[in-house]
Amino acid sequence: MTNTVAVEGPKVSNVGDAASSHQPCAVSVENASVKFGAFTAINNLSLEIEEGAFYTILGPSGCGKSTFLRLVSDLVPAASGDVRILGKSTEAARLGRELAFVFQDATLLPWRTVLENVELPLEIGESTGVDIPVSEKSPEELLELVGLKGRENAMPHELSGGMKQRVAIARALVCKPKLLLMDEPFGALDEMTRDHLNLQLLKIWQETGVTIVFVTHSIQEAVFLGQKVVMFQANPGRLKEVIDIDFPYPREITLRDKPEFIRHTAYLRSLLETCS
Amino acid sequence: MNASSSFEIDKQALLLEKKAEQRGRLEAIALPLGTLLVLLVLWEFGVRFFEVPPYIAPAPSDVATTLVDKFPLLLTNFWPTFQESILGFIVGNLAAVLVAIAFVHNKMVEKAFFPLAVFINTIPILAIAPILVLIFGSGLSAKVIIAGLICFFPTLVNMVRGLQSISPQALELARILSASKSEVFWEFRLPASLPFLFSALKIAATTCVIGAIIGEWVGADVGLGSLILDSTFNFRASLLYATVLMSSGLSVCIFAAVSITERLMIRW
Ligand SMILES: Nc1ncnc2c1ncn2[C@@H]1O[C@H](COP(=O)(O)OP(=O)(O)O)[C@@H](O)[C@H]1O
Ligand SMILES: [Mg+2]
Image 1 (tube, each protein chain N blue to C red):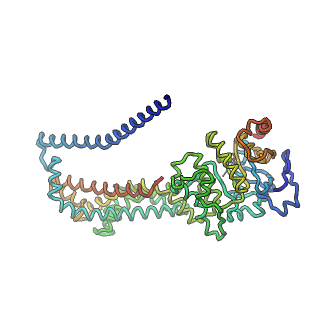
Image 2 (image 1 turned 180 degrees about the vertical axis):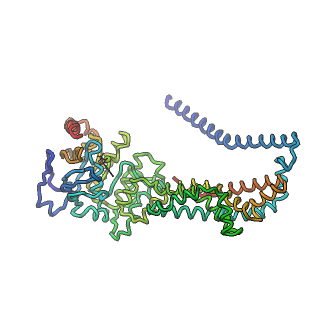
Image 3 (image 1 turned 90 degrees about the vertical axis):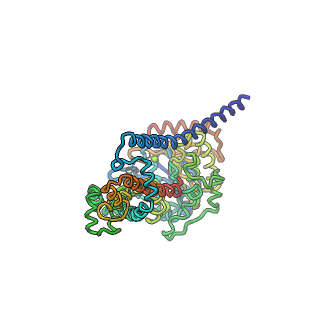
């Protein structure tokens, strides 16, 4: 949509001001800092994410990746700076269900069936008075989209880790979010399941056009999924570099064996070493 | 060839496993029953062989005869105790649940009242019972309060734990969905607390009967508790034993009712 800008180096360039004033970014973070007491988890971070983009975030553990997602989703306040979601405040975006979150563990409610878990967002938050948007796809269709047709009435404890995470993705999509934040959603899964879910996620991204910000600790996963890989740096958490990954979609698993892919992962690995 | 034979082995293994499981279940029932039977037989013969006088220790057969012969008497005394236990169970657990909810929603309330709850819990129930009978008289209410009091503390502690057992991540999910306070309570905290609540209710199922009986000891002329005292002082040992059996039967019934409700409500 917006012109893709090759960004290199720690500073994020902001080209196309005229265009972006017409079309607000999905996420626009300006000089934001997050503090927990005296501890600075994120320091002076600026980043813009275009609508419809797929960004992956990499960085050493404790560098503030989760905190960044929690900042964007209005779970923690910014100590300074500004965060806008599609031109609105994070609170307005949260109330309007423009963003959805997928956690590392699926966070399904064990007393609800699979289908009831997917329906949860439709039943909650009416007291805010803000209309809850509903996806054109029914909860059943969303379960089909994530490959769980026929398991609607299963209880979460009957599902494998990968299936639970798929339920969580279906739940995240049920209010038709414009921004999907994912915090190491496949981190606890085995490699085969993870590969499978990566492909499925790309399919969902292309079908729905949702903007995705995906935190991972796997360099391969970051390069395979993202249009851009954002590298964070620790102590204090801040932006290190944004790397363009311009392999076309749909991407196939075999992409990972290509020399260009390996060049990216090798570069990111060396970059990661300088980050902690 | 290879595949089919390994399939055969699989099937056999499955069959063996099933058999072992069945045997395990049978053992779980038959073993304690068998032990009980052997003990009863030993008791019966011991009493007859050593000619123990029946007012000290009756033979199991005597107890059984009494249980049948005196069943109307036992039943008349069963109902009051049943009523006190159930009412005490309801009152005590309901109060505990409500106080737990107040604690979880307001830390000040918890700070103000939890030490008090602990203090009351440290007073032996046998010591409070006469005080309560003095205050409330020898009617139903004193016994219900004693039975309720004995249920209160374990349920309070478990329920507070249960309401706090919801994961921080589930609470973040609630926040992202802009859930109201009451939605967080009804959709997240309360369901999460149910397994904790039921383990407390199972404790209460037996203790509420103890509470009712203690209440009857202090002041009552009906109920299993007063029948226990009566038959003890009149050296009617087999009636005493039959009454004790009725009391544990009552506990078992309440416990079973709680377990069945738990199984129906908690499917996870
Ligand atoms: N609620 C909190 N209170 C205090 N410190 C926190 C809190 N959340 C995160 N932190 C700290 O902020 C830093 C960044 O955490 P996090 O964003 O979870 O890192 P990452 O996800 O990159 O591993 C860590 O040092 C962590 O200890
Ligand atoms: Mg994290």
